[in-house]
Each structure stands twice: as structure tokens, then as C-alpha cells.
Image 1 (tube, each protein chain N blue to C red):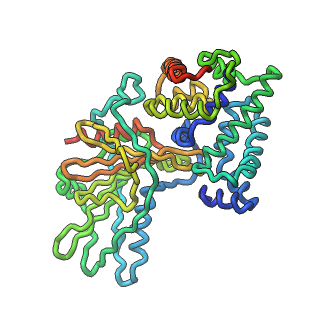
Image 2 (tube, rainbow over the protein chains, first blue to last red):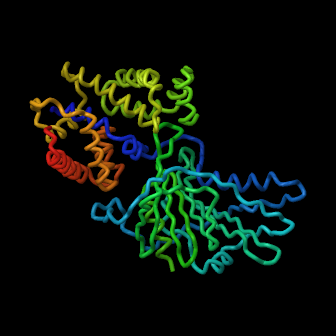
Length: 258
Length: 186
């Protein structure tokens, strides 16, 4: 056998290996801002609000406010360091994404509230702001908090969205959603039926998922999810066009905070 | 247009399928062709032939991952063209390097029992890749399927070029051992 025959034969490896690494090799340029997974969730929530009967319309429950740039907190060693132990991070291939619909809360019975940062900190009992945020991403706070007129908290989704806002960023960024009720969004990222692999980061089990997503400019980009529970708080990170190293560092920085 | 719709158009023998596939995957397929062929014109021709190849293959095929299916056609067409270039002693530098690397895995001799069945060998290589850690698998696939240059791999994986070369060298060695132990004569 000669080398070109072997190169030919290598062309016959399975689609999943080809698709797994089909993403862009460098940060691309020039497509409108878009934010597939998490934006879809936010859009559904907003749609549900705007489709209500007119007398029910209240200010949207999704509210954005600028977040201060996070302070530096020790994070895991960067995975670009060849001495880092890649073996400890296990990634599940996401089978597919499923879209749910948010529940409608009748304003006659429920209040949509906006918590301040102090109220968020008090409710969760710990600071869930990621510290290791890449320099090109800026943050916004969104929240979907619903409290019944009887005082019961029915929805407690606090979403920190970090995105590259400049033109040509292609929607690079991530959202980190926290909820004590375990409701972290209406998108479901389906993990493999068998052998869900869990990595340990800072002593906390973290389930990481990956799916190549078709890119508008051609090829694929990486979508990563990371789900973990901290002191009873369900956390879900969804990133697009970010590297696994960046995702792990962000998760580690959240876990490392007291 | 989503992949399922494009595949449906192919199955319906609707020429819109070609337009839709080209619109969505030209950049992807061009990147593959350009990694193999030095000539932009040759690469463009291979990409254009890809849509026709898909037209001829679907049906009966119903690809699970359209991008990989189209990419595979582009890669095969580009390699065929490369073989012609090799015969004419016109071979792009990066491909020469990749072929040199793969020479370590093969004897260069004719297999007296005939060439290993390509499909069977590809499946064994697939199993080998599945057992590799993801970062190493990524390096191998990007180098020998997408035929990325070493500097591009170093940038992509955040490691030095030397680290890429050393890692690929080890993987090739492991692959050769893996195949030889299973009775493949390369």
C-alpha cells in the first residue's frame, strides 16, 4: 500500500468524526449577530409575553442591564497549556436540541419581578457571576422571576449573557442560567441515552455536551453546554463559537467563587 | 434551508437542491478542496463537481450528516485531481508533507494478497479514532481528513507547532501498531 492509498482510505472514516471537527479554525468575520439556543429560549419567553391579551400586557420580564467586568479569580490552568490534563474533561455528544414552550403565568395571579443584584445574591446565597470571561465578551443580566400572589416563587431563572457585540462576532458568547427550582430554560439539550460522562471541575460533577452547529457562513461551529449543581442551585452554561477550554475555565471560575 | 429540506429536494429530483446545497456548503467544501489542491481553479471545479456528485448519489443515499457527505465527495474529487497532479509532478507543498507523514505507516509495497478492503480498513481506523482522547482525535482528523497545515492546527488547538508534530507522530505510530496487530498489511 502506498501513502496516497492510505489517504484515500482515511476519507472513509465515519461522518461523526468528520462533523465533530468541522468547525471553523479561526474566529470568523461578518455575519449578523445571532444567538441560536439561548436566544430561542428568550425569544419564546418574549413571544409568550407579547401574545397575551392586551389587558394583560406588562413590562417584559426580561430585562437587560450592563454588568461590571468580572474581577480576576484563579481559574483552572488554560487548556492551551500542553501540560494541562485533558483527560479529566469528558464531553458528551449532544444527540439533538429540543425546544419547549415556557409556561404562561397569568398576571391576575402572578407577579413578574425584577431582582436587584443584592436580591439575587441573597436568594442564591452565593455569587454566580463568572470571573474568567474572555476579554471580547461583555455581559448583560436577564431574569425571569415569577412570584404568585400567595408569595410562592414559581420561576427563578437568572440569566447572565456574555457576548461579543462587535460586528462580525458571529454570535460568539455564552449564557449562564441559574435556578434554585431547577428550571434553566425551555431548550433541552439531549444527552446520549447511555453513558452520560461527567467531568469533575473544582470537586463538582459537571456534564458537558457538544454539538457541531451549521454556520451561516458555511461549515460548523461549536456549541457546548455545561450543567452542574452548586449548593442546590441548578446551573446551565450554553456557549456558541467558544472553545472547550474557555467553557471549562468559565465553569471553574463560577465553582471557585465562595 | 435546513439539511433535511435540501436532502428532500435531492430526493424529489428538484434542481433547487443544487442551488441550496451550493449556497450553504460552498465555503465548507472550498476549504476542504483548497487544503488538498494548490490551484484555486482546480478547487473550484471540484466544489462545482461536488453538487453534481451529490445529485448522482442522492437517491439512493440519504445522508445522515449532509455536510460530511458533501465534504467527503469534495475530498474524493480533490484527491483524484491530486493524483493526476502527482503524475504530472505538480503537487502542493502541504500535501507532499502529509503524504510523507503517512509514508511512515505504509510499506509502499504491493500487498501480495491484494489491497486490504478499503471499507474494512476505514472501519478499523474509525474504531482506533473513537478510542483516542478527543483532542488527539481532533488533531488527526483535521490533519489527515481536512488536511490542515501544522500552524493552523497549532492555532486551533492552542498548542505549539512542535507539540502538534510530536503528537501526530505518536498517533501515527499507535495507528500503525493498532492495524498491524489486527493483521492488516499496509
